[in-house]
Structure formats: structure tokens, C-alpha cells
Image 1: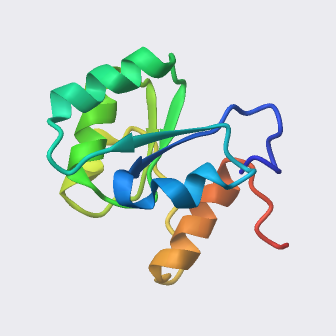
Image 2: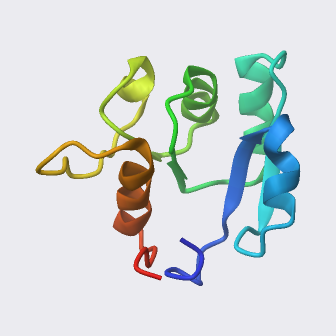
Amino acid sequence: IKEGRPDTWLTVLTASALGDVWKDNRATDGVLEWRKEESVSSLAARIRSVAQFDVAIFFSNSWKTSLAVWSAGIPLRVGRRDGASSWLYNQHPVEPDHPLDAIRMNLRIAQSVGANINE
């Protein structure tokens, strides 16, 4: 995403167990980790305190992060139309002509926001 849209400030919201993976990734500008025991309201408050985000893109259907992002007031929330949390998204990628596995669907979402997935 960052290479396709170099003007983008990219912060990754991730489970704390995966934080180190993202901290060393040059394609991200920031990492916001959440803990399993953290409440939705606490996470929403931390999201609001970090920055005024324009868009959130979901590559998984975690109800906790989806609800926290919605509660934080991020205006555009992009995610798939499957799972219980999909009603919290207000933008959805165009449905493919045939079913895709999760990785290919995530690549499709990334491509829809400017990522070059052919490299």
C-alpha cells in the first residue's frame, strides 16, 4: 500500500503478539498494538489519541478492532462483506467473479487502495 501510495501515512493496528513483525517493516510509519484483555472503549480512546485517521482497512474480521475503530470515529472503514463485524464497515471491495482465498482477497483489498500487487 505504501509503495503504491507514497503520500499515505500508514499505521498498522495489530495484536501485541505481532507487533515486532510490523515495527521492523519499512512500509509502515507507525504501529499501534492492542492487547487481548484491553476493552473496546480503551482501544478506541488510544486510536483517537494517536492521530485523526481518515481510513481504516481491515484484512481480518476481528469484531473487537472493528468496533473500536468504529467507536473511534474513523470515517471510512473498508472491509469484506463477510463475518459479523462487516456491518461496521461502510466501504467494501468489489466482489470477485469467483471465490478467492483469504490471501488473494486481502491483496484485492490492498490493490483497491493503490497497492501494486504484481511485484
